[in-house]
Length: 229
Image (cartoon, rainbow, N blue to C red; front, side):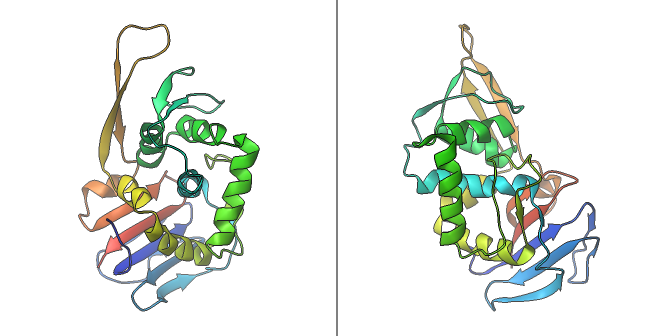
C-alpha cells in the first residue's frame, strides 16, 4: 500500500515551471507550493489561496469519486461520451482499465465514461464529487466535469495539498497514478481482433526522477507531484 505521510507534495498551478534538484525557489508564474507532510507545513509557497483552473488534476477527484461510489472495479463499462480517447466508443471495458487509462495517460474519454457509468448517472457523479470535496475538507474547490477539460474545474494549492494527503485513504489511486506505463487489451465493437492500447504516463519526469511516486501532468497545464523524501 502506498502512503504519503513521509512524502513531499509539490504543486504547481502555472503555465510554465522550472525546478531544480536542490531545494530552492522554483521559477514559475502563478501559484505553487512545496508541502512537507511530516511537519504539516509549506516549505515554499506562492499564492497558495489563489483559485485557479486545475485541468487534469480533476481526474484525481474523479478517481476518488468512483471508488467512494462502491462500484465493482472489474465490471464492464460502456465507452461513451464526446471527449477524445484511446478506446472505441461502444466498447465495453473493465472499469479498472478505464481507471488506469484515466490516471496514467490522462484519457479524457475514459474519465467521461467512468462518470457516465456512475450508479446515479452523470448528475449523481457530480453530486458525489461534491461530497468527496466536502469529505476532504476543501473550501475552494469546484468540480464540474470528470475530465478537467472545462476551465470551471478549480481549486487552490492549499486545497490540493489537503487533497493529496487525503488520497492516502485511497491507495489504488496513488498506485495507479504512479505507474509509468501499462497496457489494456480489448476488442472493439463489430471486430474479431483484439487491440492493445499502450498507456504511458503524461509526465516525462517519471523516467528521470526515481523519487516521484505519483504525478498528474498535462503540459502546459497544472502539475501535482508526490516525492518520496
